[in-house]
Amino acid sequence: MFSNFTQPMLELFASSLWETIVMVGISGLVGALMGVPLGVYLRLTDAGGVLQNVAANRVVGGIVNALRSTPFIILLVAIIPLT
Image (tube, rainbow, N blue to C red):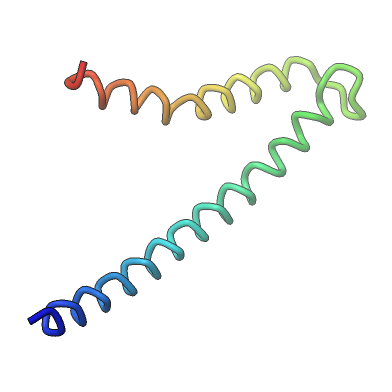
């Protein structure tokens, strides 16, 4: 009885696991490719940095901070019906 059920579930689990690994890998790669240059730019343009440009640093830093808080805001909106 369980052998007929177990094999399709194992195949589904394996394919779902692979899809999850691929999605995490792609998002990690995209995040690193975008985050590392932005972080280096913010560090270089900070006050006392090699390419000191405080105005550009504040603008880019504000954008980064706004984007960084977006998942938390989405979570807050998603749990409103539960409270």
